[in-house]
Length: 260
Figure 1 (spheres, one colour):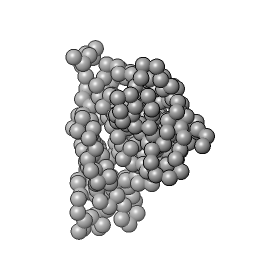
Figure 2 (cartoon, rainbow, N blue to C red):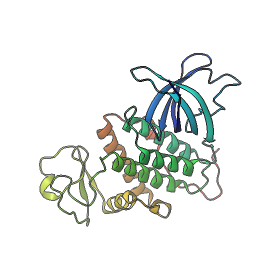
Figure 3 (cartoon, helix red, strand yellow):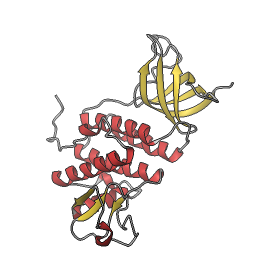
């Protein structure tokens, strides 16, 4: 069986033996693959240190036609995720990888999802900008991922009756029913949170396919509410809380300060 070439993001690695590992890749061509990399941790291997978490690489993989692990035969590093001055950026990158794993099935190609994830990881690698902006980027990425897989929350129309919603005060947001609700459809629903005008406006802006997140400035109260809404929505959608989610706290850093 011939090896196939693919553009890949390393989203998980686990040991298989002293020198080998099982690597989970999200590839642009084949979707999510779980492959055995024999000898990956030997000093001289065919993987060129390309299998570090969050690395972007070109791989050669032999895809199995039935159950079992695929076989990774070669990997060439395109971009290593660089740990810069920002710990929140590292957490953001780890979260993107975990979310990508949780939202996708094996062998289901979704090139647009790959492109969104790759762009975000490149932004976060060696990040040295404003840390509060990372929070906006992560939410923008979450909403883009949900849109691509067909599960974006309703933000300007009622998730139940599809009537337009005018955001003037606090809005009922249904975790189980897919987003914002009008007053009529709110009755009798469970798992509802009341979302502020500022938070709803931020969600609408960040759901747009633009780089608005770069210039969005949110007060800490609104940023915290935004993170809480997305954590709750994704927990209900996926069925569990992601492990990295509690680390997503993006507070402003004093100018010129570096993490200790």
